[in-house]
Length: 391
Ligand code: ATP
Ligand code: MG
View 1 (tube, rainbow, N blue to C red):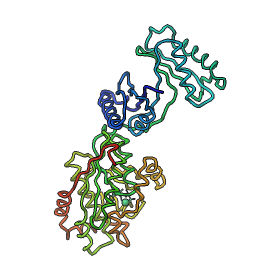
View 2 (cartoon, rainbow, N blue to C red):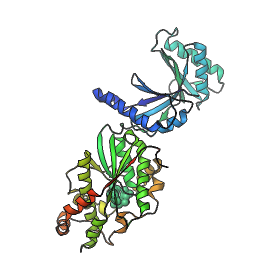
View 3 (tube, rainbow, N blue to C red):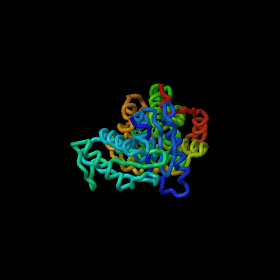
View 4 (cartoon, rainbow, N blue to C red):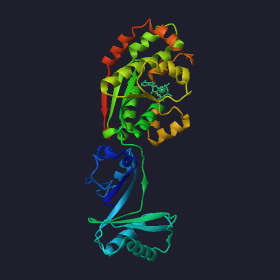
């Protein structure tokens, strides 16, 4: 029924002269998410974006609800500039919106229309009251607002407002590299970074043959689920082979430090890959105190291997809050599939909760740290995901 979707975006307007760049990014991200659906194109006028539908507004709206930077959307009816046509349209929109009380808001950018905005609002209000006996006007706190905009290209009429994700368009802040495990947390950390404009790439450490092909597929699937939220609806996932490093650590005589050592290797490899690919920050799914490797002492000792910023968007969240987001973004069911992660296979019986930099450096002195990192980087593969490309 609605030929148009009105797309509202928020914080973009705060960005002064960068605004155009932001709008273009947002439009690109929208385009990427609807490329497989029929639609009539996107137009940008006066700080708003309109998307022409092809009788499929609900399907298109669902896709827009995954694009960061959009605050809300409204399906819009269009009528010619004729009072009777506008009344009929306003009645249709009203019929399609739940609620008992309403008001009409009219705007008239097109001053050629014979009625002023207040006159039009009053006339339409009267018409709606006569047409629907259950409705009452409430100008202060209405259940819904019937909006009418009289423009040169026609009258735009709408009342539904569908809330969206907000945030900044993914890609507007720069590139970041997410350490993506198969767990619940790191996909959520990636999602929240995208929310603040990061174009996220992923890095997963895989320990084939100690971990299965399925555990890798699971991470590819998580990356696929994150792609729609990301810049241009794409997600580049790097898969690094961690097996040789794990084997080298297994031989060491301080198994309680192994998790800390593994994490230090991961962060070093990630920092080098980030530098190579032009990412300015690393992102992890750490939440303070959740497990032994996420105590303040552990994080301090792990973080010491890089001077690159490490974003930890979940640091202050309880597990339940993280789970709620992962359910909302649909990664939860994939995250809980029971395939081994490289760290669960090699997890020591008593991981150190207060590892110091001096302790781990003593162990690392016996390892060919640079050689192991170089080898892992050389073997890193790239998987590129796009929205809706997963069979
Ligand atoms: P997650 O649910 O994200 O796996 P977790 O609570 O299981 O987190 P850890 O296993 O201690 O916590 O991992 C902490 C962080 O280290 C993860 O959020 C992720 O960013 C990174 N990480 C762990 N394992 C891997 C891996 N195999 N590949 C890439 N990053 C990893
Ligand atoms: Mg994990």
